Length: 520
Ligand SMILES: Cc1cc2nc3c(=O)[nH]c(=O)nc-3n(C[C@H](O)[C@H](O)[C@H](O)COP(=O)(O)OP(=O)(O)OC[C@H]3O[C@@H](n4cnc5c(N)ncnc54)[C@H](O)[C@@H]3O)c2cc1C
Image (tube, rainbow, N blue to C red):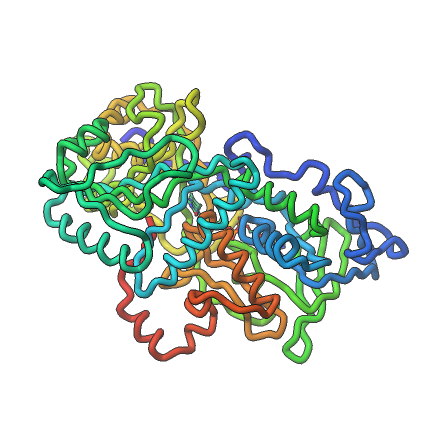
């Protein structure tokens, strides 16, 4: 191994990937002015280029009023603001973030989506199907400004014992609402396999293709290992630009009156178990926004912000990394889908490498069986040669800290893992390419389902614990939390994501035997 974890480099403060800065240019410069200039959030004009749209809050006693204050302008908070202001026409919605929008976790994501989620129950599939419906709606109205594609997720196995698991998985998830299964077994009467398109999302098949015929696998995926025995091609899946989706929703929200404030939510006044006001700080300036509704969309800081209203949310975090490198060898075609190896892996090492890895407790486990789920996809348009690679081979629970340290051995581990699935990548293991590594925290509940809904304080809500699925769930999650705030009819999956679920005895029993978290 070339770069065993001897040194660690700082992460979490890397510039956002993909060129866009994350900062809303001048939108984000918010003045904290003297008390006599303090205004009411709703009184300020919505014009984008008017200086007065800034919310002026005092260094001392300035007060504003808002109908809803949202803490966190990640993809979840932005979606909540969009649904409240644009879809529900709610006035005086204030979005507060101490960082530029989308810059903490959301723009570090792999930006992929899928409706393919396991049970128990159909809640995850229901939420994701709704979220994809909403993303498609936004893509249509914005001329696909965020490059939504539908290339699919290709899950592969080379283990004959796992084929029956694949068969069961497609059958069960199809029944949960993922869509029809098309079997490709090489027998007469099989439907023909329809390959995906590189761009766009219309006119693509739904559901899943289960391919057991090696001829079809090799014809359509010639770059994958010949050892692969079965492929599931999930079709309501693909990727997008989260930066562009987030900015599209944020722009629409701002046009509809949402105010973005660059500040830290420092504490929250609660009296008689009701939200009263939110206290903000920006530098040495402080401000208070009176409100009866507060949404916690603080991403990895969800628990910290939850404690401000006296609710200890049952979440923990794991650090997940992602590498990007130039595929100069052309090992993966530019039109490839998301590619996922689903078998556990044992990496091969030379004698010298084995001895080196065995020396340290941190690296000794790399000699043993490592988890499944190493995955890759091409990033960028046809002129790009970037590949993304991810593998959660070591993700213990961790307290979120920023900046966090990055394992310098990560690219090599990912490339070794990926080259089992894509032999053309082996060339990079010998000669490691220059790689950029970034990442963030998956903040999650123990069963890896989100928290969306009311908290046991009147007027307090949460949209979080979005783990490794916050981009794909954002539109549906924002819509759901907005429905809670508005007190409107909730979709059938709402109760599965409410905090109250943990009070249910049946759910507690279910948790004891919960096996598949569905996470990559
Ligand atoms: C490596 C990696 C790959 C991923 N891949 C995918 C993927 O392919 N598909 C997918 O769907 N998801 C993916 N995810 C998960 C996804 O990125 C997250 O679930 C999602 O971004 C969470 O969004 P959020 O808005 O909840 O949090 P964030 O984006 O972290 O936003 C929270 C915001 O709250 C602000 N905040 C917190 N506390 C305060 C405070 N006190 N005052 C003011 N502001 C505050 C923060 O500054 C931050 O901007 C991935 C994540 C990682 C790390």
